[in-house]
Image 1 (tube, rainbow, N blue to C red):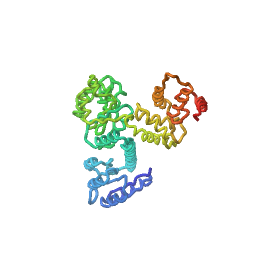
Image 2 (cartoon, helix red, strand yellow; image 1 turned 120 degrees about the horizontal axis):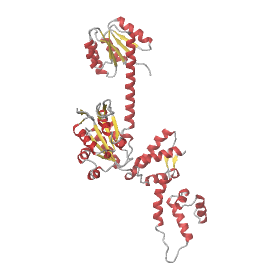
Image 3 (cartoon, one colour; image 1 turned 135 degrees about the horizontal axis):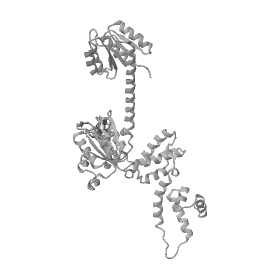
Image 4 (cartoon, helix red, strand yellow; image 1 turned 90 degrees about the horizontal axis):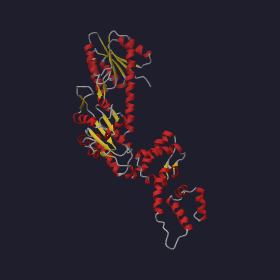
Length: 458
């Protein structure tokens, strides 16, 4: 990565000359100016990454220039040079976001150390910006696949929620429907996008630890509490906390959670002071919370507090239109991951995928496509590439339905004709695929071919 340009502004020629000589030997590109006015011209044209600025300058002061610069560029790193007795002014400059200050006379090596530290800060900011950008792209609503009306309606509602000031959101849906993706999309589509997104899975934390994890604890609160610890609610402040599987949180924790939602305050374990937080709580569950309330396993007041804006993700079996678009999306993802080149799905395979009920929802479909991409060397997905358990679960009920129409009439029936009809039905059900027809009849493919030749069905 190239080094940022450094702009040095000081009215003492010896200081600007010394800094330029020293820093250029260390590989930096340095521009100097002897007044704030000249420095501003260079700042606008050369866009330096680091500014070394004297507080006392003729004309516009360094402090006034700093205010002007901050209105133009909040990211530039500023190191201020102060004369003896200007420390109080330097402290004021710190409030305007300078990186650090040095007092005259200064050691040139001290400047070098500060610049190296400031570069680490610049690189860290760039990395954070890059990672945030990746998160925005990865979890944007554009990556939530759904063309069916139930899905497009749900996405439209989620976007409205994201843009609103709603502090609590309840996402409901079966396992594998993508509750986590919706929660993250809401966060990264909202004004809180640059703030933390903290995910908590209730069932992943032991019951004895969940309160300390959520709310933190003070030093000495219990035997092993040798230091104070911030809880996840504090860490999520200004951002979003996502409480997955909230239906499994125990009643004692539910009461504290209700207070956080209502008052935006809580106490650490062993603490006396209220801690205030500003955050959005997104709760998700695959449990029927209304039923849990009737059973006494979930607080009614918490349920209705969470259910201010409910978002229901429909199961995949109720939106068959989304099966193939989802499958194609996962295909692209795994092509890239496993360096494969699966281009399409055959019409016969599409029928099988659409017919399957997908009780594991989008997660199950994703696993199936991943398995095919790993194991098969093909550019088109055919029925024989689809896992046998899926094919069987579709074909057996159909075969059973066909079998139920067979009965022996009073005048008798030819077993040969029955056998021929069953083979013909099997071939029709699987649209001519001999391997699957043989599987339906419980015989080998060779045996099927023999019987097809025997009965003139080839």
